[in-house]
Length: 269
Image (cartoon, rainbow, N blue to C red; front, side):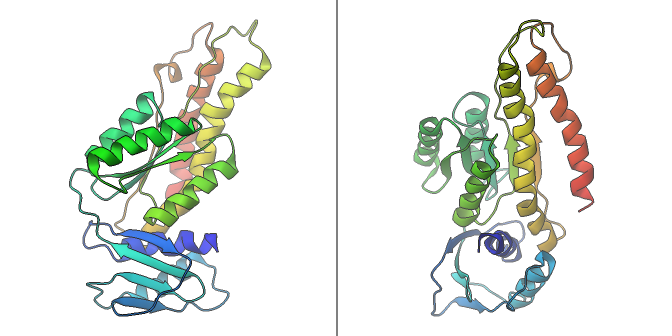
């Protein structure tokens, strides 16, 4: 049940943290047994996120030092490990769109250098995989994951987030960087070109936030002092338009309004 994994994994990652040393949680559909494994049984039919988190909090209330896995009956096992990393964002999981090249790749590489685990999402699959491989070579295995993602397709974004949660236990930072530019005057630009720019730069930001927000919210439910971040990479074109760049300017002005609205909506729960 992917929806339940999206609650259990991020909650365990935060609940088992020592201070702000976040655990890495990897999901396996096979349940496990043995020493140093915490076994949890959630009531059948339990779906309310807050109640699931409460049950998990009660289960891990006792000391859990040396814990190697949490086995949830009927769901699977969640392996627990301590990633050894240092830096300003040590142990945090960052999901960066448009990360195969340019700003996105530089952002991902810098975050990895500051201790983050980085998911590089891009429609340029080979570029995302190459960039992730380079980060792993420099910073160690399991420090980066390249995924094929089309930010204009909600199913594509959801699949990538599903994989992120299964591999790392959740995410702490969404950076919406994917963007495209097709210049042209309003007098001559084809509708298809306008729609293509708007789909990536405006609608894609909406989709990514909508899919990621529930995962980010679980951590705060589990631990009120937990914080996460959503960052949208914008442009000077989001502040000043130009005669031959209307589609791009509009697609950058728009996300500023979305960001204000998202902040109000998400802070209210």
